[in-house]
Image (tube, rainbow, N blue to C red):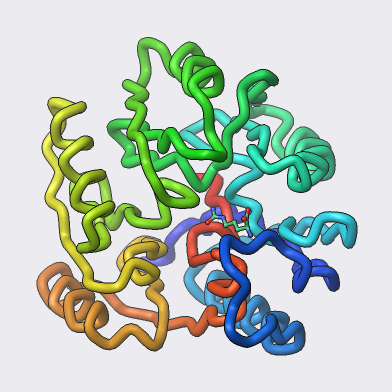
Length: 268
Ligand code: CIR
């Protein structure tokens, strides 16, 4: 049966990408040509998985702009423009806001306002709950704003996290199954989630932190290549639920602390 296309936003890679923010300097510098190829492969895979991909131009003054997940979030019919926690990333918002207002005039669009700041990488929307990492990039003012946007619709839970983002250690396979890094931080996030919501989730632990961030599109999962121990777990999940696995090598994005969810936003 033909499936309806899912709208998906990505942002082109800036030529200044090697100046992106990094928690630690990588052993090898970012190879821009390779990063461009990896980004093309990422977009190509999304297209092949039934996504209608809209590409927003890069801004060379914004080296991190390809990480569009931190600039805009989508929940059902509602879009929320973020206010990134890092000052060098705040200028990313303008072009994204203009684009979505033009493209989706019928959607409700909210905006996180200062003194609130929030990166979309901290927001895990399961379909039933909204979990928000309280990190260096997301503060309590922003979480309060999200609560008021979604009052009477979704509960918004704050989850303190000692990583760049909440989704550095957790992502969702579907409304009931969450993929979590087996590191201490992942376990602590799992416990906090279990304590906070009456909704029940199954947690699937993977040994590699980077591998815990996946994309789930219909019956497909997109995982990071080069993490064989985690891949075994994904293979078991795929067998159990009839999923098809697609692997992407995102080595150059990992150097800039990016993963898989951060380079796209799904507008369903
Ligand atoms: C940053 O530090 O903001 C970027 N270099 C990486 C952002 C990755 N975003 C994400 O995983 N949502």
